[in-house]
Amino acid sequence: MLEQQRTIANSVSMSGIGLHTGTSCTMTFKPSQENTGIKFVRTDLGGSPEIPATSDNVVDISRGTTLGIGEAKVYTVEHVLAAIVGLQIDNIIIELDGIEPPIGDGSAKPYVDILLKAGFVQQNAPKDYLIIDETVMYHDENKQIDIVALPLDGYRVTVMVDYQNPALGSQHTGMFDLEKEFVNEFSSARTFCFLSEVESLADQGLIKGGDIDNAVVIVDHKASEDELEKLRNKIGIKQKITIGENNILNNKELRYRNEPVRHKLLDLLGDLALIGAPIKAQILAARPGHKANVEFAKQVRKLYQQKKIVKKYQLVKKEGVVFDVNAIQKILPHRYPFLLVDKITHLELDKKVIGVKSVTVNEPFFPGHFPGQPIMPGVLIIEAMAQTGGIMLLNSFTDFQDKLVYFMQINNAKFRKPVVPGDTLYLEVEMTSRKSKIFNMKGRAFVNENLVAEAEFMAGVVDKEQKSNGI
Image (cartoon, rainbow, N blue to C red; front, side, top):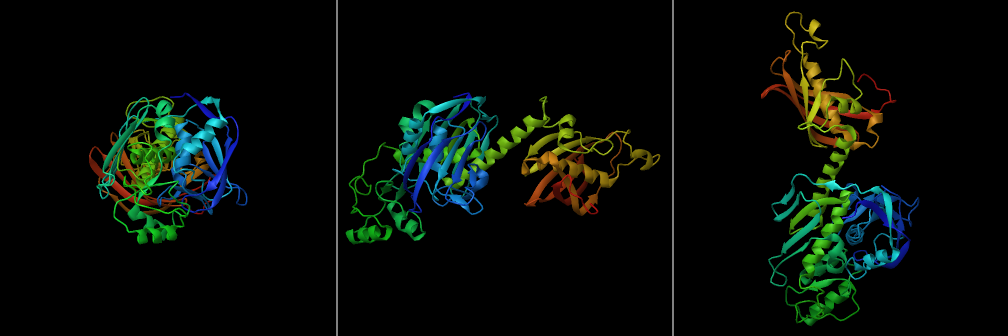
């Protein structure tokens, strides 16, 4: 795998119609600077809005992956993204004067060919690989979908599909060397669907640009000539359609014996580009689809963001510690005598954080609370939980160092046992909901395994220069 980032050497363009919208579009690939990633640009809209290709910007997964920010959208991006990551391109601008890229022949090969024609430029910055060092799993019980990422010093992808349909049956494939196999073995695998799905897709307003030249239609039921003619008119195909002897519409030949599952691997590659970084891992996927792919990409992207944050703040890696007190002081504005968390031992961004506070007799509040019988004030235990929770909000704002987290509300606070010098507080905080810059969290404090305090609280994130009223 390449070690340095790369972009393309020259701008290149292609034109055509989109698979689902049927609209015309010219798409231009342009070189981009280091560390800018993959961005789509709608040049036909005012201000030419940019849409970074990350899972944060996925707005629809109806038979394809759609990205959007506000009114700006780009449909069916997965084949374009598969071509880009398959060629190990890190930084690129994709300009479009329409809402959906040209579908070409239904594979990633047209994009691969034009990108190869553009050539590549090696950049100075190293690739920002996400190295999977622990198993990451996604499971959908209802659809029996499983996607797993395992540690590996490389990138391998294995896919299995089983539609329980005699027209397709079970298929599997694997890509073990991206550089050697992607272009020749996977990029030309075309999109496919079943004949029984075609009418439903048309009724949903999809496949307006679909025809037998840009999709493989697998025949999964008998249909009369009259039924085929009605279907042809409904979806606007000019060619006559027939049931092929090979159970494929119009007897089209497959490019590979297992072309459908190879295309599923292609889709998976494109959707995993939405992690926003190249990865080193072994990916195993059973019955993947766009919805599952994107959910898995979101899960892995959170891991990527978390690793970037830990790398940014924790300079010295310590076993069992995510952030030590030096890292915490880079994150939180609190200082003596009001910094009430010593280390973070667990962090799941937007989900859960665990902090530790060692309570010593030297705490400045003990002489007055209470003389001769020191007890940690309950409100400070809640404050310690809140500070711990504040660290969980790190990825919510790119300029977190310019923000402050303020209490807005405390509910259901309960103090079950006193906390005294010599105790070690374990502070567990979970995020329960988020709306814009307002966060709801639930915190619990333990000494050993004993629950000593709990509370629900609401916090708001504001700019440091913004004034607050009574918070």
